[in-house]
Amino acid sequence: MPEASAIPPQHPQLAVSAAIFRDDKILLVRRARSPAKGFYSLPGGRVEFGESLHAALQREVDEETGLKIEIIGLAGWREVLPGATGGGHYLIMSFAARWAANEVVLNEELDDFKWLAPDALTGLKLDDLRLGDLKLTDGLVEIIEAARRLIEA
Image 1: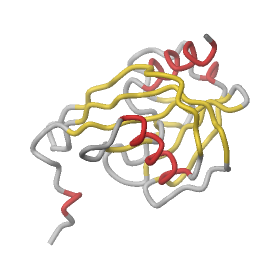
Image 2: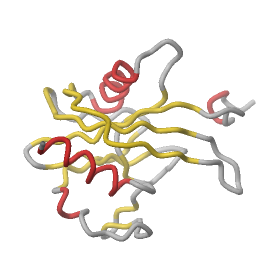
Image 3: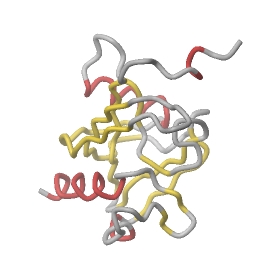
């Protein structure tokens, strides 16, 4: 019998992600399983019933990376619709954040991380989902640019 989490819910799921900046670099993490397996993105995940967006973000970042963060503000949102082969429907609220404490320790949902200069991402075309050998999730560059503006304000 498949795990309950392997079957996408039949209604949209609310999720959060964090564009975490530390020493002028942004944290990218690679997903070890679906959705977005093999793609670099921002740490985050689903909001639980009754949980505030900020509480969910703090919890997800801690669970996935072990980091403590200072949330600066909402950088934007993305909607992920089910594809032709299935998948879930997600509304992802992405926040700008500053690193506050700890070093990255990945959980089983992630298999790699990189601290990159945001300038390495600037100027990528909207349809360009690669940075060298890194596969990036759709909309990542725009969210990072918006988050960077909040951090630098």
